[in-house]
Length: 202
Image (cartoon, rainbow, N blue to C red; front, side, top):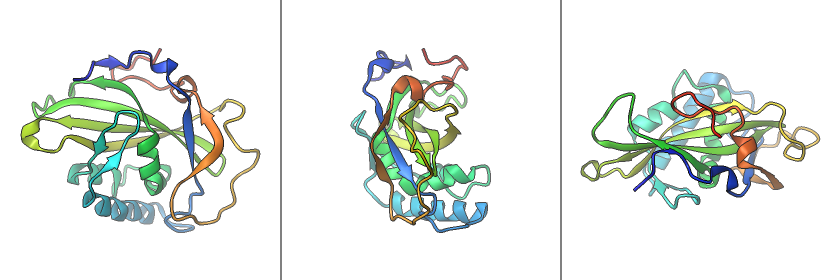
């Protein structure tokens, strides 16, 4: 079972790799609406899969209809968030669990816990913190750990050594590729991030 609150020893965990996308994985010069539809199409395919593996927790995260509606063809998503779906497999695999809490907003008795996992993403020289929301459901629901939502926030004043000296060339790639030897500490990744109660990680 999980411990609610900030994960113990969070800032002592190893640095996280930075996932790199070129930004054209779904196509070049796409409108915001077209990006969202492309993300939705990919998520529909992943709904039929066994799920996405997260190395930090060992969980296999499923995607259900509710999660797809949040992360796919959703007009509230930013273009960066839609582009991040192109690298969802690697971003989920590399994400670190930072916090667990109850379903304080909806108080759904079938939701045992809500987890916040974070990963680092670079697109065209800009570094982003990706927050994944994961729900753990009761056994009767038979959904286990389910990927529910994402949020992307640009990390300003990124520490030296985490970003390239110039933007990556805009060459389409079939999937996310790791930035060679590039990583960011958990403390730097979570700088400015807030826990569910509005308090900073620390």
